Image (cartoon, rainbow, N blue to C red; front, side, top):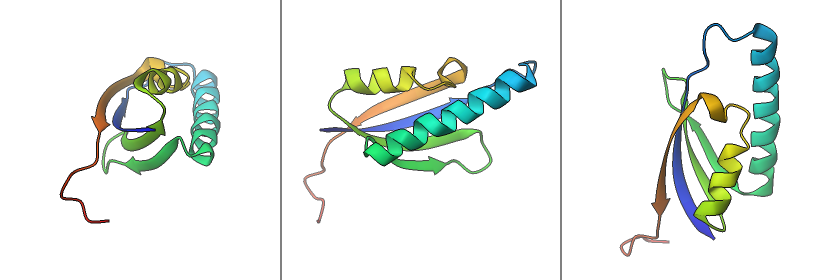
Length: 93
């Protein structure tokens, strides 16, 4: 498995149809919660004062992460930054 730190900044257009917005947000919530339940989306943290989050994904590869991120209903409205993580040699377990 590979761990990835992912920052997602959401920029939904203000002129998006309200019904499309509500539907997209409902699908986003369901999709993200399914990924959390599966263990692939390990952590989800809101960034205070922003429409952004920091997440930790635990997936097989960068390709799998890319596929999961592209599946997000809000993907077209996101700026995403990904950092691959590896264990620090000074970490105490």
